[in-house]
Image 1 (cartoon, one colour):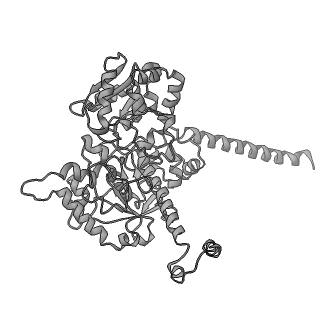
Image 2: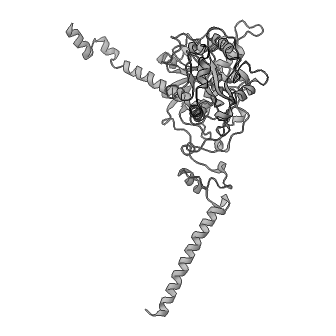
Image 3: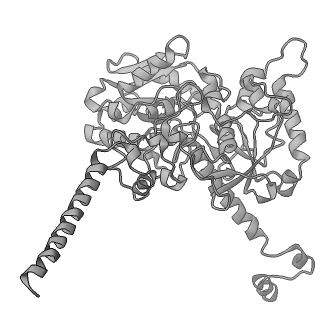
Length: 500
């Protein structure tokens, strides 16, 4: 081939090469510097699915406009906490997601459509005629649970909201528990009675009442449940009843004692009515604000050695409080005082706990109180002096990693508690403090619920309990009634009969 004929070929080759280089360069330029609208949403979906964040960190990327499946969202760091009323929903919660698949949920829950007087009407909610439930699409429109000490026992409120939202695709929440419409498809049956609120607000007679609203609702609930085929099928063993306030369900608990109770502790329950074999211990909703991990004071930044503020003179098991008060009240690095939620009490307690290395949880009228969970929210190492306390999720959570346990007889020995706490060095305290920051989210109630929070932890605890109940029921069915009627004996029984 002549030199002249080769020139056009070389020219075309270099022209194509230069064009390709410019095309690649322009693509990189667009990806790095252009506004988000120039980049297809599909690119961002792909990036998020592959768990990369380079483009998501671009200042012009608006996360609320990205639609991704729920399974992907669960890998993203959860947004800031949203409570039941005043805080705005974060953009991540507004994203659309795929509805939970009932066949893949860990727990399928059937919830009775009880009349509103058993639940949201107790909050003052007035729905339309024949409307059983409020809309839960917008967290800012959901009826607000009363504040003060009412909040600490409102567990049924959060569980009910979670079930109501479980079939709404646009609400991002874990798929641990999902509501089913047919009770025959359910693993467990939830009773949506706001028992703690009923006790707190309606246990006293009003006007010409001869029976309080709280007692009347319990009587009606017993009649309703015991007449249901769902209850008779297993004698209520697969039913969940939340009675977190120690005095809630006082009139009905014995008649409904075969059900699974969600409780604060067993302090006011006989063992045949409530026990760890069938029931769930749920955390109180803490009253102080949760301290962000990056704002939590370290060992040297906490000048108070030990903190307690609350009622000092108690009856029964709470007598130990006054004994400790007289032992510790004159110590300069101990804060031990009477306190209540009145005035600015909760904020004062929050600041005190956040400035203390250790927070005392001392048995009162009952073995437990929200003080333990206030301490956890404050990253203040709890010192538990309550011999009969039962703790939430203890089958999966090692409390010794972030709590100090002291028996009541040891605690009231002069000098014992002070020497113990002063002997804990900075490195050991710091390990417990770091662990507190890791597990604090497990004690947060919020709507919508998030992965690993108190709502999901309770559902998981229910699932484990149901598995145990199912195991026992299936094991007891090894030899059917028909076999027993014909006196067919097991091999072991035959051997025993032959030996005799």
